[in-house]
Structures are given as structure tokens and as C-alpha cells.
Picture (cartoon, rainbow, N blue to C red):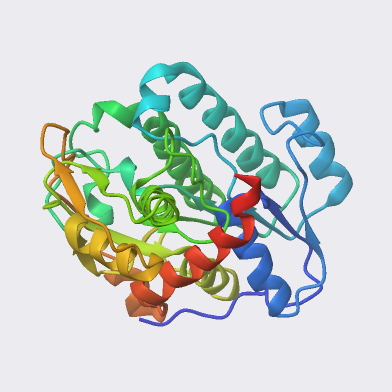
Length: 319
């Protein structure tokens, strides 16, 4: 399959990264800076409320961007999603609708929308293909967030279809890396394990209790690999509107725990609390469409965990 280089290879291109302080946005910022891009723009949520359409439109009218990358979202785990369904639906709809519409209205040449694998049906066949979108019902625990993200994918597809604009959506698998969330009440499994094993090591290698049986299989992608996929989307005109971005490497939760325990240097026992739920037995994405075009993950899981733990140790006093 051929795909032409995009016009957005100019290092002076004015690029707005929405959510530039988050794990994903900051990784994209670091990569583009390293690649020599000199005209990157970011705004904190205090400086610009992305839920406010008038503010967003005024910002776009003044700044006149060539490229917009939407890495901004209200995110959280199962608990937050189930306790706050309305903001997870409405805040995310408002953020992305304002960005997509302003990008269309103010002639942004390229728009990259970032979503999540939770857009796919709960019981879709594995590995998850882009074609499975909207073929069945969603996972109830995060459907509010998922519905918002699906609306964003469809808005970008509609603009592409009607106006021929280069708006593309990338759906990453489970991400981890620097600037991840290590709060045990709201973090995902990998950063939560890093923190648990670290605290147990500090407390004389105390035993660590983990949820479930350890048998579910999960896929993880280092956030720097996702940043490379975004860069790939910026420097190529991709022929379709939606691409999965994953590592294609599955690991059981039990094997992940052993890997993290080894990286952290914890020497105590692991106790599996089988009274706690396991979650979905398997969740793997099919990323063959973007890989066929030339992007592929580079970071091995062990190296990625080591880098993430090193970063965690640096910020440890602030947690």
C-alpha cells in the first residue's frame, strides 16, 4: 500500500498539543522537540478550558494552527467512571467536539484524535480489529467514556468523508510510562504494581497482595511508542480514518507481576486474592493496519518498566 508524505514535515509547522501535560501529550511533545519541531503550543486547563466552545474558537482564531493533536481527555479507572458517568460523557464530548470543530472551522491541515481500546464492544472477538467498532454493546463500567470517544472517531471520519480533510484517529492499547498515574485508588494495573512492590520493598520486603488469579492476558504499549505512531501519522497521509496502535505482545497479569517485582527488586511474597475480580480474560488489539504502513513498536516491556520505575523514583517524594 502506498501513502504519500504529508505537507506537515515542516519543522516550523504550528502544532497545538491539547493535553500536553499528561502522560500521552508530554511524550508527544518530547518526541517532536527532539525531532526539531520549534513551534509547539500547549495550554494548561487553567489557561484554556477546552469544554468552553467560545474560548476554544477564540484561541484557534488567534493562533492559526497547521496541526492539532488531541491528547486531552477526562480519564479514570472503573470506580471513577461508574461514580461520575455524566462528566465522563459530557466533559469528553465537549473537549473533543470543540477541538474538532475549531480545527475544521479554522482550516487546520491535519488533526490527530487519540482514543482508547475501550471503544470496542465488550465481547468483540480477539484480537480487536477496527471493523468491530459499533458491532455490539460496550463494557458497562466505562461506556460513558467510550461513547464520547466513539463520537470523536465518527466526527473525524465525517469531516474526512465530507470535506476530504486529513483527520485521523489512533486507538492505543493500555499505555504506561513517565507521567503515569500512581495513585492506588485510580491507577491502572501496571503503575499500581510498581508502587505496591516499591512500598513493600521499602517496608522490609513485606508481602504484596494483588487482585484476582493473575491469569488474564493484557497488552501494554510504552507511551514513547505511541508518540512515534503520532509522529508517523503527522509525516504521512494515512489512507483510512481509524488505526489501532498496540504492541501485539500479550502477558499474563501473573507474569507482569513477576517482571515488575524483579525490576523493583522486591523479595517478598505475592499473595493472589482470588475473591477479587479478574476483569476481562483477554484484551488484545490488532494493529496490523498501521504496521503494514510502516509503524511498529520498539520498546520491550522489561525496558519500559525499568524506565517507568526510574521515573517513579525521581518523583517519589512528590507522590
